[in-house]
Amino acid sequence: MNSRLRHAVTAALFGSLGLTTLVACGEDSGSSGGSGSKTVKLVSHDSFAASKAVLKDFTRQTGYKVQVLPGGDAGAAVNQAILSKSHPQGDVFFGVDNTLLSRALDNDLFTPYQAKGLDKVPAALQLDAAEHRVTPVDFGDICVNYDRKYFADKKLAPPKTLDDLTKPAYKNLLVTENAATSSPGLAFLLGTAARYGDDGWQGYWKKLRANGVEVVDGWEQAYYDRFSGSAGGAKGDRPLVVSYASSPPAEVVDAKPRPAQAPTGVATGTCFRQVEFAGLLKGASNTKGGKALLDFLLTKRFQEDVPLNMYVNPAREDAKLPELFTKYGVKIADSATLDPRKIAKNRDQWVKAWSSLVL
Image (cartoon, rainbow, N blue to C red; front, side, top):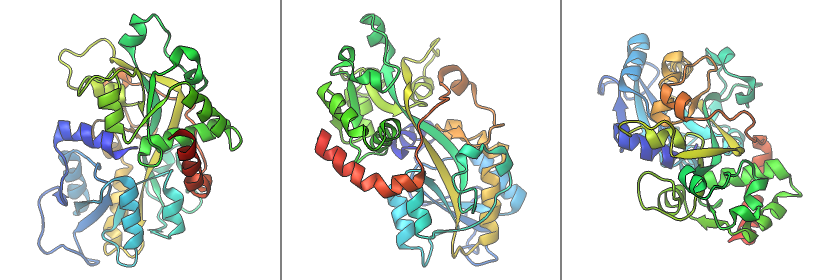
């Protein structure tokens, strides 16, 4: 999932994580490292978030405190972990997703560990099931969102599929993010590659360009400046935007009273699934604590804390979703996916070709 959406939402709700943060019970000056350390260092992108009460439960259960080391967006954090792999910054890395997974695995970042609770995680999310180098923690879907009011006022049915977006009825209505600079923009490109294949995705983007798609640098600009359905920020004139299946719940979280439905909807046939993983860093100082943390990330206690902190879905299939998600969200049954190895092999080439076609 794109860290900026979650960072914006969680900052509004709970405050930004900001600089290196120690969560759960305060810092212990004698626990900075080594096999006997009572601190587990969690390296992550900037938008890892969890309730303090949940992390305190981890400390009560295991005796370990969690120190969060934010490292920028997901791509930057993964790159930094690769550069520092001979002297890892922490014990566990969280936030590598399926668009970056092969890069991390090919660079041998992780020590295999089969976390407790994996039997409750669907096989479709276990993309390294043979070796257990990473543990799936959450997933979400990048999808086209639509402004309900616009389409109701125009008496026009919103699009449902990628094919719909190329129809004349939706000309000059869509804004998306640059695939070379934005995580959701890249995911949307990957979704078209999954849907139309190596021989068809470029032809699809030619049609989309001819139908007036607008491209901006990042999600915040697309959603808050150009999209007409955002509750906050400037009002744009584009009623279709590439965003998240979790954007509708995020739109109503602060609404008082809450509306009968979210002001935005999701075109469910346009989605690409992102899965986020955590792994025990090879050469970790606190291997035992790292394994305990990976186990904890798959407990129902942590998994049921995920949606309202990071606006993604828990990996455990028996984790209960909050009412905000069940009432205002949408379950994507057939989100597109690609093998991480295929993404790794083609990502740079696809982005280069996309840039030539669209920009």
